[in-house]
Length: 633
Image (tube, rainbow, N blue to C red; front, side, top):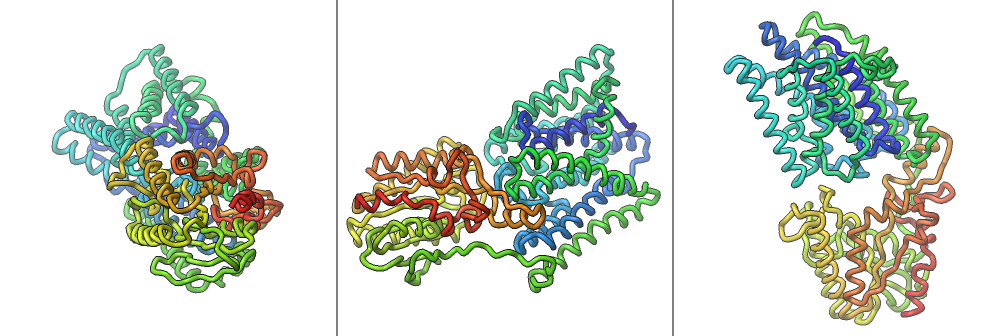
C-alpha cells in the first residue's frame, strides 16, 4: 500500500486520544475511541494489501503473516521483556506472576480472552494490569489470521464483485452482533473479534468501494470525518455502552477522512506525521506508565501526569527508531516467520520458565526484599474462634457478655476492630468472605454460592432463636455485589437471570436486601454500616512502589465522588431497608473521607490491608462511629 499522509495523521490523532484518555486529561473522556480509529485504518490497509495482491495474482498468505509479524512482534517483545525485568526487581511476587501470565497471552495474541474473564475494560481491577492494552493487538492479530483466508476463498470462488458484497454482509452481521451483545454481554462485545470485526471491515470497504471526489467534496468529507471523530473523543465516556451502535460515529468519521485523501493542513502537519509514525510504539509504552502512576496514586498529580505523557512519547520514539525501524525487510518468507515468530515464542518461554522459578524459589528475586503487608488480624482485641463447614470467621471478640453481633462478609471481620474500640463488652463476629447479606440469590462462582447460602442460612436461623434482642451490626462489601457490570465470581443475580437492566437489577437487589434486613429486625435492633470506601488498588503496594522508584511516599486517596458512584445501588438499598425495617444507618464516609477525599493512607501509613479491607490504622479513623450506638443500647 502506498503511504498516505492523511492515514498517518489519523494514526496520530488516534494515539493522542488514547494516551490522553488513559492519563485522565479533561476533554478526552471518549479517547478510547482512538482504538476504533486504529481498527478502521488497519482494515483499510490490510484489505488493500490482500485485494491488490489477489488482483495481480501475487498475494502470498504466509508472506502476509510474515509482514504482520515483522510489524507487530519486535516492539511488543521488547516491551514485554523490559516489563519482565522491571517486575523481577520491583513487583510483589503475586503481581509479578500475573504480569508473566499476561506477557504470555499478549505474545500469543490471546490476551483479549484473558481480560474478558476479568470484567469490563473500564473496571478498576484491570487497571492494575500492565498489559491490558494488548487486548486490541490480540483482536487485530486474530483478524489478520482469519480475514485473508476468507478473502482468498471469496475472491477465488465467487470473483471480486461477489466477494465485496459478501464482506458487506459480514460487516453488517458483525455490527448487528455488536449492538446486541453490547446490550446483553458488554464485556464480550468489547473484547471479542466477532463484535469488533465490522470496524476493520468498514475500513476494508473504503478500499473496495472507492469514490471519485472533487476537491470540495474531499474537503467536506475530511472536515465532517474529523468532526465526528473529535465529537466522539469529547462526547463519549466510560459510562457509555461500547462498542455497539455508538461506535458508528468514530468508524464513519475515520472512513470519511480516508476517503477524502487530502493534502490538507491536517494531513501535512509535521508533528502529526511524526506522531503517526511512532504511534504503535507510543501505544505500547504509554499504558505501563499509566499503570505505574495509577498504582502509586499519582495519576491525579498534574506534574507527574504530564511528565509521564512526555515519557510515553519519548519511549515510543526510541522504540520506533531502535526496534521497529531496524526490523529487517522480508526477503524470504519462511525465514521471516521463523525469525519473528521465534522471537515471540522465546519471550513466552522465558516468561514461563521465570514464572515457575519464582514460584518455587521466591528468594531468587534478590534485588529487593518485599516490604511486608500490614497485618490483617487486629491487635486491638482478643478473639476465640470456632470451626465451621463454610470457611467462615465464627468468633467471640473481647470478653464479658455479648452486647453486639457483627454479621456480614470479610468487611465485618476486618472492621470489627472499629466496633470493639467502642464496645466495653464482647461481640460475636459472623463473617464469610465474598458473601452478600441476602436470603435468596445466585452467584457466578457456584462453590462460593453454596458456602454463602449455607452460612447465611445457619446464622439467620440462629438470629431467630438465640441472643434475642442483642443488636446486630451489618457490614458488607455491598458495592461489589450490587454492581451488575462486574462479570466475575462475586457477581450476584436473581432467578437465574443475568441479563437484567441496571435499573431492574437495582430494584431486585433492593427488594431482596430489604427482605433480609427486615427478617433480622423481627428479633434484633439492626444497624447497617454503609460500604467502606474502596481504593482502586492495593495501598501498601502503591506506597512501596512509590518509595522504591520515586523515593517518596505521597498519601493515596480517591475522590469521595468515586465512592458515591460505585456504592449508589448499595446505598439506595440500605436506605430502603432502613426505612422499611426500622434500622439505623451508620456512615463511615465522614471519618474516612475528609475534605472530599477518601484516605487510603495517612502520613505514609496504609489504612488498608489491600484495596478494601481496613487494618487497625484504618479502624482507628472510625473512632466515634459506634459511640452513640453503644450509648443508646
